[in-house]
Length: 191
Length: 149
Image (cartoon, rainbow over all chains, first blue to last red; front, side, top):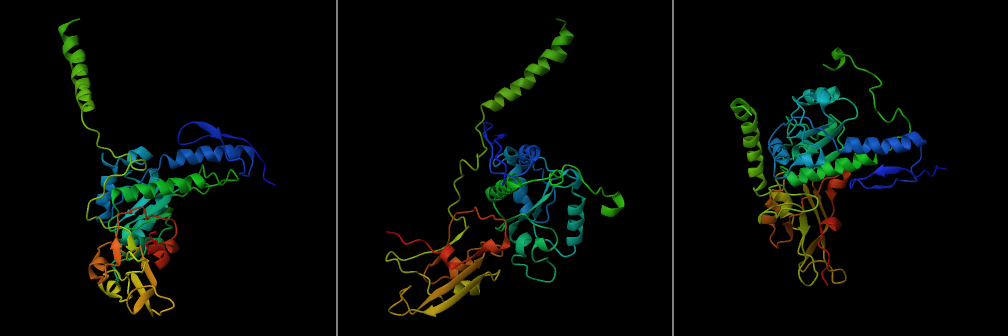
């Protein structure tokens, strides 16, 4: 039987409300995972990784009119070591696939992937020998965005969807909190 | 207050805040997206809709011209014959299956141009993102416009 624990959690409106009482787990983790999920979902730093024309829309999303900074995602990191989310913006060629996988491996846990556009998600019109038919053949994808290219609002909707996914993560043990990398990787392993 | 202090400290502060103050009068450009939406352009092409006649009959006659025009090959049309007992469209045939792979689709609108009855149209609903690949196969039930009263 799950313990019924009343916890105070901070929601989007910053008003303290009673937390999810039906969530199982120990007292510490129940309170902590809500807090950590809030922190993680509101600071999803993307990786500067544009593969094709979708990258133009990705840049436009960060610009003043749409302003991805309102969701805490304005800090596009130039190194995978500091990034949380990888936006695969554009067609992924087979030659680029190992590079993408390597960059994904270099990102620290926890990490998420948004597959932006028809080409990255499924290959789109490029059903040929050169293009990977869906980036999920290379890396695990969390949110798919259809469109060619998706407009900035469509990408923002995907970021909100990803935030909701991050917020829903349940962590029952301290290991699942994923606070430290349990298996530190050497430079030779990932580079 | 010496002249140097005024020149090197006070004046730059005033000039700097003056630029900030000027920006306050500028119009605000940011669209607060989830709360307010921008008006989409008139020819924006997003989510497909299968439309109906005013009588409630489906416009689609299952001719597969949209599937032929599609450069991404993302449309499947399965046609069946209308009978007097089960009538879906005015003509002889109707589409008993109509599926679009939204991940393949590039929203070019060629299906809309090819359609002889104006059945498939691309409307302005852009919020199509989802978590699973399987959710992107849009079936006829999802695409078909609800019957108007």
